[in-house]
Every structure is written in C-alpha cells, then in structure tokens.
Image (tube, rainbow, N blue to C red; front, top):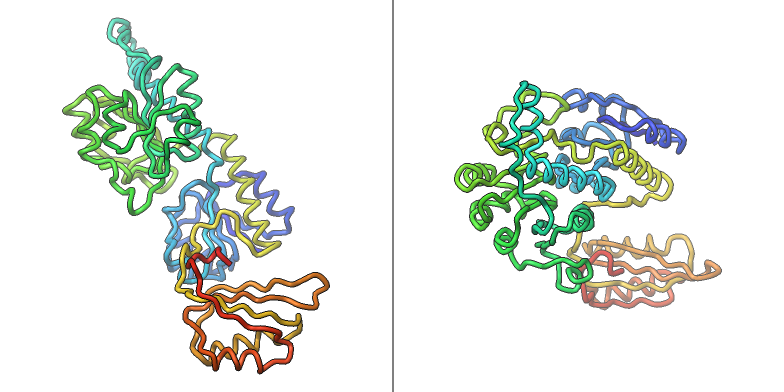
Length: 408
C-alpha cells in the first residue's frame, strides 16, 4: 500500500509504516498545486496530513482511498467531497489531549502573572516589581470549561491541583457525569461565563460551533475575566472578543485564530494579536514530542488496520442515518451465486441496497444475509427471490425500527 505523507511526521511513524510493508512517500512541504501534482505522480492509496488542506481536485488526482488527519480535528479536509467519492476520512482524537491542556494552563498562568510582560521588560533592562506584583492567583477561583471532551476532562484534575473550582458547559454533559467529575454543570454558555473567573475553550469546529462564542457570551463575563482558547479560532467571534478586551478588561490567551497562516511560517497581521492584554502562541497546542509520537503511533494503527482488514478506526464520515426503511433477511446455504441472485432481482426492481451483512454459521454450510434496502419488497419480488435459487431456504422482509447504518 502506497502512503503519501504531506506534512511533517515523526520518523518513528514512518519507520513503522515501512515495517508494515507500506511504501512511504514523504513530502512534508507539498502544499496546494505541488501536492496535487504529487498525488497525480505518486498515486497513493492513503494520504496523511496535519495542517495541509486537502481539496476536492486532490481527491480526483489519484486513487486515494483513505485520508488520515494526524491530529484531533479534520476541518482542513473537504469531508463532503471525500464522502461523495467513498473516500474514508479518519483522525487521531485524544492523542494530544494532555499537550493541549498543558498549554492552556500555561496561558492561564501567563495571563494571571503577566509573565510575557515581565520577560519583555527585563530584556529591556527595566525593573518593575511594583507593577508586576499585582496578580490575583488561581487558588479558590472558578475555571469554566466550554466543552468537556478529552481535552476538557484533562483540564479538570489540573485545575483541582491548583485548588480551583470547575464549572462546565457541554451539550452532552448531564448532572450525573458532572457529579462524578466533581464539577458544576451550567445550563447555558452565558451562565458559564457569568460563573467563571477564567474560561477555557475545548470544543471542535463544526458548522454549529462557528462563532459560537460571540457578544452575548462575552457580555455575560465579569470584568477582568481571563479567556483562553486552544481549540479553533473560528469558534470565537474575534470582533466580539476584541470589544470585550477593550471595554471590559477581559484578558485573553490564544493559541488559535480565525485567519492564521496555513504553513509553518508566514506573515501574520491581525489587530487582535497586537491588543494589550492578549498573549498569543502559534497554534502549538499539540506540538510536544510526547503528543507527536502518540499521534504518529495512532496514524500507523489506522493505516495498518485499513491495509490488513479494510476497516478504518476513527472514521469521521460514515452516515449516521441512511434512506434504508426495510431489512431483507435471506437464510441460505453458503454457496456461490446466492447473493448475486438476490442483488440481481433487487437491481431489476430498482431497489437500492444501503448496507448488507452475511452471517455464516459454524461449519460454513448455511448463512443469513441481512440486507437493508430503501423500500418495501412486494410479494411477487419476494417470491422470485425464494423460488429463483434452490439454495435459498427462507426470505423475510422487516420494517426497520431505526435508520441507523449500525443497527444491522
């Protein structure tokens, strides 16, 4: 299996892919037109990227079957285009959770103690102990978490180690889970903002989370609240954050921005970054040796599973529901041509198969095929299936209680 890696990737991961008998093409600087040409030339079945954008034309340029985002998100990949082509998209969730949580707390401490300003003035030869002796401290304060996935949950024990209270908002958070974690649950983002001295954001970028944190959220904050975002810049309405910083003394620590450069280096001109009270880093939340090694190992696991079994761990673009309304259950002898006979009749009846599974019994003498279809089967069609092949033992049609593709 040919694997094209179009971003920086750990040597340990490349060596493991080679050991798995993959042919590895490593082009860490291939971007846009050069990546398009590389896919045409190298003809990979698997494409591995980190921050590199994967576009629809790239998917048509070669025989790509699987795209792996060597990281937690996948917003740099045109997932709808991949889905239309039957290309799997997978990622490596949770492998960078500790690294991102560590950076988030680094930003919190930097904001509270104004560490970057301390360093800057010392380098200028200025001693200003009187100014920088003013800090609130973390003990006894409330950390509000927007999102409680793997990274958010890593924040909880770190906050408690500092003697902080923790509150959280998440669409999936219930009172039972909050109680088990020893945190408070907030019913709304505005309630969380009002209850918190420090807010840290840990949710993925989706259509429904784009600019989720806007003017109402920042207006609900207490003056002098610290705001940290290490998730995705597009989740925050940056103009609303800027207004809050200027009007209400909100201080912010950001690792991500709505319009950040896509490459490792580049020109960055944004008014927010130059605002007093903003401490920024360069989207480096996952960039620790530990995290990158873990992500490389998970990427190898995904590629290896696909190569050896055809299954894809962590796939993000399978349908959560399909048009299947009925299940055709065919009990049959395990002989060649039985299912071909069934599918041929379905095709002639213009009935589409959504999912299918063939369960073979011990001894491989008999099997049951479960075939999800998008319409009921009239009795004449069922009769043709039953009587048209001597190896078919029984045929049943059922109404599906759920349209989930995983309710086979």
